[in-house]
Amino acid sequence: MVLVSTCSVLLDARKKCYAVPAFNCENLEMVQAIIEAGQEVSSPVIIQTTPSTLKYAPPATFFSIVSSLASKTSLPIAIHLDHGDSPSLCKTCIESGYTSVMIDGSNLGYDDNIKISKEVVDFALPKNIPVEAELGAVGGKEDSHSVDKKDAFFTDPSQALDFVNKTGIQTLAVAIGTAHGHYKETPKLDFERLASIAKIVEIPLVLHGTSGVADDDVVKCIALGISKVNYATELRDAYTKGVREVLSDKTVFDPKAYGRAGRKSVKDLAVYRMKLCKSAGKA
Ligand SMILES: [Zn+2]
Image 1: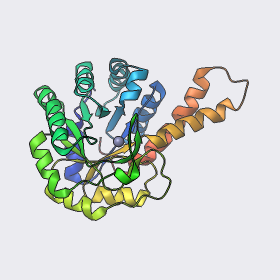
Image 2: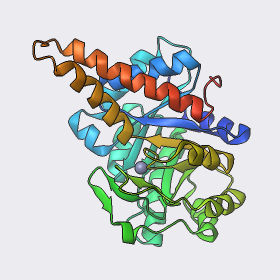
Image 3: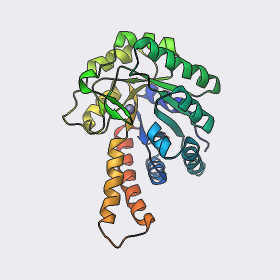
């Protein structure tokens, strides 16, 4: 199947009260793992890459990997730019074939966040590419962009609708107490805030920094209106753990041997996440 728009996948999720997990991939094996997981449980697939991953290998390379694997399946598969740090990177990804982009202006003031998000929407929408933007700031470190815990501010529900209307975005990342990276303490999510945002804003909502959030809390967020759940840190952990186990045998020298092990642990985790988010069976 050709790659699909992230929007088509997420609008169905929003309507039917499930979420699609979006997985950050860093290499071929992780992309293979996520698509295999999707096939195993018949889940729509969203694969995403951050700016630092795109410095490691450019958007065209990731697009080629994802689209060639997608063409061998009947699954709806989308490829998304996560935390785009400039309109120019968003444009490069769109021109390389990405089926959605995020522009992250959450570290800017409100008006500048609107301005940069709208600039990307104005470029993307005529090409039918949906745009995700973030209001409020998810704590922790994502790529080179870091938000001090005390500076992390939550999404203001009354501002959310104005932000969506002024930018014209298709999905909104909300800040309700999650953080990127490894949690040092158990995150406390603001469910009431999420419920108020979901009541006012009709477009699909996105949860960032979900690695380390309790499964019950994720399920609750989905019931309250989250349609896309981002997982990055735990996949890196899983991949590295799988590789490390094989490499503890010093006689191993074939990259395929440890690549396979990393792929297997990422796939197992992705299957688990697809079931948890209830995207399993929705493809
Ligand atoms: Zn994020």
